Every structure is written in C-alpha cells, then in structure tokens.
Amino acid sequence: MRKIRIGTRLVVGTSLLIAFLLGVGWLGIVAMADMDQMNDEITKELWPHARAAQLLADGAMEMSRSGDEVLLADDDAGRAKAVSRMEGARRVAEDALARLDALSHEDGERRILADARRLVADAQPLFANVRQLAQAGDRGGAMRTMEGQLDPVLDKLETAANDLTERASRAVEAAAAAQDEAYRRSRTTTSVLVVLAVLLAVAFAIPMVRSIAVPLAEAVGIAERIARGDLRAVVDVDGADEVAKLQMAMKLMADKLAQVIGEVRSGADALAGASAQVSATAQTLSQGTGEQAASVEETTSSLEEMS
Image (tube, rainbow, N blue to C red; front, top):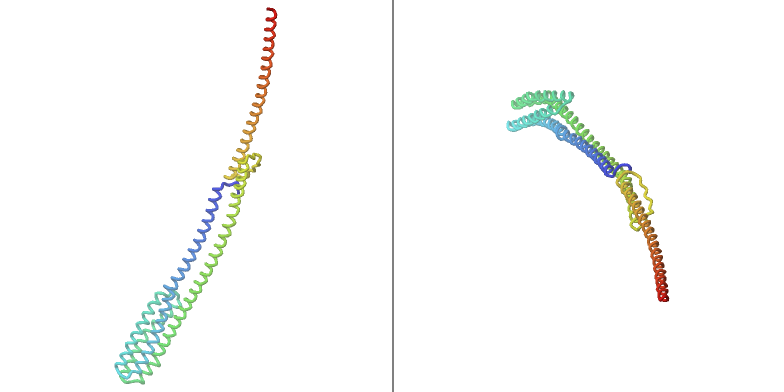
C-alpha cells in the first residue's frame, strides 16, 4: 500500500466509500419507490375497488328491503317512501357499478359486473310491478311477484356484489401482505448493507491509518535522535509515498550532517597541525635570535679587549 501516494489512497478509499453509500441510497430509493407504488395501488385502486363493491352490496340489500317495505306499507305515503328508497338504492348500485367498471381489469370480474348491471336493470320494472299491484290492493299478487320474480333477481345481485366484495378484499389483503413483505425485505437489505459498509470502512481505515501513522512515528523518532546529535540512526526507507520521501530526506540530511561534521573535524585537525608547526618555527626563531645575541655580545667583548 505504501507504494501508492497518501493522497491517492485517500481519494480512492473515499470514492469507493461514497460509491458504496450511493449504492445503498439508490437501493433504498428503489425500495421506497416500490413501496410507494404498492401504497398507491392500495389507496387509489384496490381500496376504492373494495369500497365500490361494498356499496354495490349495500345497494342490493337496500333494494331488497325497499321491496319488503312496499308490501308492508299501509298507505300511499309509506309506499312512496319505499319507492324513494328503492330509487336511491338503485342509483347507489349503478354508481358503484360505474366505479367498478373503471377499476376492473380481469375478465371474470367484468363478466360479474355485466351480470350485476343486467340484474339492476331487470329489478327496476319488477319493482314497479310490485308497487302497482300493492297500490291496486292486490297484496297477494304483489307478494307472488316479489317472491317469485324480484327476490331471485335481488338475491343474484347480492351474490354478485358479495363475490365482487370478496375478490376486492382478497386483493387488498394480498397487496397489504406484499407491502409488508417488501418492507421487511427492504429493512433486512438495508441493515445488511449498513453493517457491511461499517465493516468495509473499518477494514479500509485500519491499514490506511497504520500505513501512515507507523512510518510517521518512526520518522519523528529519527528526527528527535538527530536533534540530540545522534547521527548514527539507521533510516529504512520502504515505499514511495510522502512519508517514505520524508524518511529519505531525513536520511540524506543525516548523511550530509555527518559528512559536514567529518569535514569540520578534518579541518580542525589540520589547523591543529599547522598551529604546532608555527609554534615549533617560533621556538626555532627564538633560539636562533638568542644565539645571535650571544654572538654579538661575544664580538663586542672581543672588540673591547682589542682596544
């Protein structure tokens, strides 16, 4: 690793970590998008679908109760009220069928919707017939028409509505289960990736820190020994990064200092030798001067004796 520059190592390691984190973030965004799509499917399609199917079932039951109320009404006001409830229930059923038709995509469900629409249409004239017989005072005929013709139609309508409601409920439950499973899968994947990211970061950081801190500590120790005047420190240069270059520079500095000190010592020795020679020469000159003075004195004494 020390063959690579520290800056390059840091850039590469940081880039890899950022890329990994971006990958984790992208997976999280994809998972959230899938869950959002599932949620939209439930809230915008399946739940309205189930609600419309339930409204159709409620409308069918209300139409059946309205028919019974027509038979049980004692006056025109009661029958008019029952007729009004029947019309309201029919409109609710038709509105529910229109919603279901827009939300249904399966062929089997569309066939059920077609049957339900036909049954609602068939129930209207039968209900009008029951009302006319009841208004005419023919309760027996109204009862026979109700039980023999209208009730079977309304029973089939209720069966179709219940079938649609059950289909919609199963679809909602399946979508909710799929959403829960997607959430659990996304949570597990994210947790595993986060743990993996931490492990990779630790696995990358430990050798990275050691490759910088250990040789840097060695370089600091060598610098302290040189500062104390110990130039015998052996500098082992291994690698080509900035710390290795620092170690090489310190090695060259120590060698240069040792060379300079050696040159200074040699110069001092040469200077000491020259000083010794100068001292010897001075002594020789001093001796010669003494001898010359003695000779002059002897010559002077000889001249005095001759005089």
